[in-house]
Image 1 (cartoon, rainbow, N blue to C red):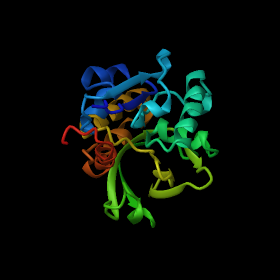
Image 2: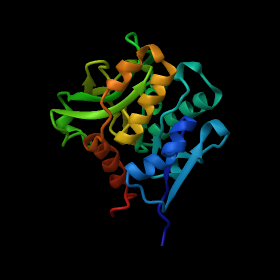
Image 3: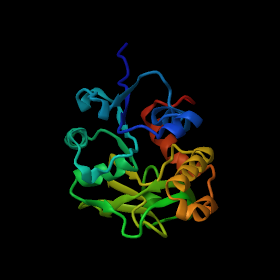
Length: 242
């Protein structure tokens, strides 16, 4: 019997130490919140120098968030952009999250940079946009749903041909469908409410002048946005529930 191709997680960084102490690192968050079966799973940590095989060796790829910035043009990030363009050429299913979402936009000709209104963090209300009802992952989204966010950079201009499927009051490009097999979310479907609360506490420590404001932000579980990640994984046949 032919062995199934593995699902690849491209890890683009690590959660801050305090988050890892209280919760988990990114790979575990995706495995747990995405209900990913550990069978036929490969995790490649790009900043540590690890590199994946050919895109054709995988059934799909998830790109994590990162403390790095796409505009820093780090060597591993630029390498990953080239690898992802190859993956897209062979129609490999791709799901990018936060940094991964921005990296895809940049790799495909969009513009990424710091959001002019600053950081967006906490559990926010998002609006589904016209066309989402026809998207294979977004078809069941309600008109409004919540998602967990923490980001300073954003997709300022989507690449040619990308479809915007959801927005928040702060950010107009919360979900992008780049093409039939390539999908990205600015928000974090792998964060539960407890993780989001810890990030808010950390931001309040780093930005004491905004402590009261930051700690007033909601931090909740977001099952609808989490469901997008789970649907992607299930569609590849890598769900624990299958």
